[in-house]
Length: 297
Image (cartoon, rainbow, N blue to C red; front, side):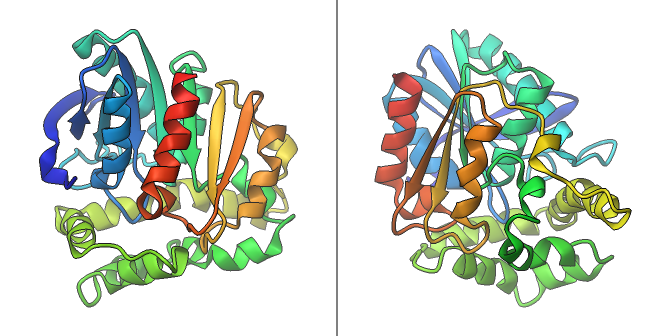
């Protein structure tokens, strides 16, 4: 299904108005959060599968993306994203009178999920995180190759240059990153055009870059002062979580998920063969089956 096949709704939560896609009207709520460079439409296969499984499934455009409000205080930190997720679950739960809530997050959506657990570990009965492991910053020194894979994160700290680079030649960098991170993904013209249109809207580009400056920037500053991160510094994740990695992910190495059980108290890790960073788009049948089986068991 395309983005236009879903119901659209506006949700006021955490001081922002989120524009969302919605599928299903079940008595359980699923909040589905996208990553970078992406938009809510990437959650289409998951929305469909969860709707069929009895959920009311909602995918918001994250703060600052496309039609969703920018952060009024300029805060795009992980904890702000986590607070958004918790507030969305509360507001949507009241609107649709659902019994409980689960959270599905890809890339920055996964970062938001780990932060949501810190904000309120009772907000979600289960979580599914894709492509980003918990304790990412504490794993960099144990996996030096990841420092090279994360070159774009360091580049995004440079003033002005990332914004110009993203807009260059009609967002050619977005297509480059998709090809680098998911080398075997034959994405549709409709999907890439949807994301480009999101990035053309307002100041989405500037806000998307601020995610990296607000979260990665302070970590780099801390490392520069000699405060090297470690897994021991990572707060535990209390919410039961399924963590999904693509075996061919060119963005974040799947080996980083080997440590997930050291941080997530109740953890299951699944590695998807023949898939990269955008595994839910590349192998939607496999990924959605794993997600549904975990959330309804």
